Image 1: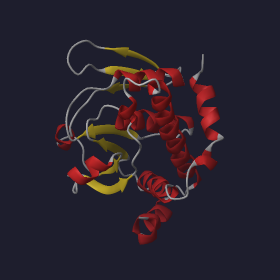
Image 2: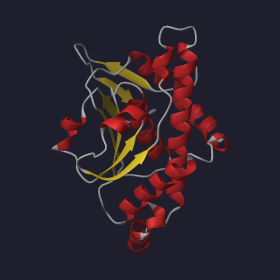
Image 3: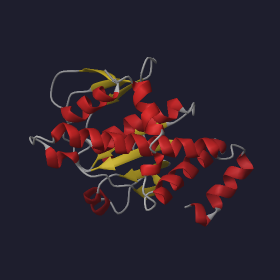
Length: 221
């Protein structure tokens, strides 16, 4: 059975698979995160999708895991949707195959509590809308993970930065013989890219003056 350590080690060797057209958005996200940390600003990243059931949830988990792997503290990764549904069990199962452990509450829109390896860190995953986050969440980086949400949310209240980083929807394979393979490929893609983001974040300056230069530089946006 794959352990989370082994899974991450494998993804770290695959940065060459990240296409050149995706790197600018990933590197911009790394610059924004590094700049906020160095300037002692809130480092919240909210992944936004339509149903908040698959891709945005996977991105939330992998952002947390990648930050932990690179020992970058103070990262608050969240996710939300334009509609409330529930976390798809297949998304949880692909995380389990990657080495995470989890528990589930009962009822409508159950909460899946996913643990990051052998640490005490646990993430409660459940479907929620952007409006559920507005009152408690401001000054965050919004990362749009699907084209429908990008069209539905031209303006995201509370977001001070916005990026579009779409992933193929594994839902298209639901019920097919390829279902597991497609979900696992989506998980690999998201994990690879979030690990790349934090590997780039780790390289960037951590002093406040350099951070301000990065945040004020239009080329970094």
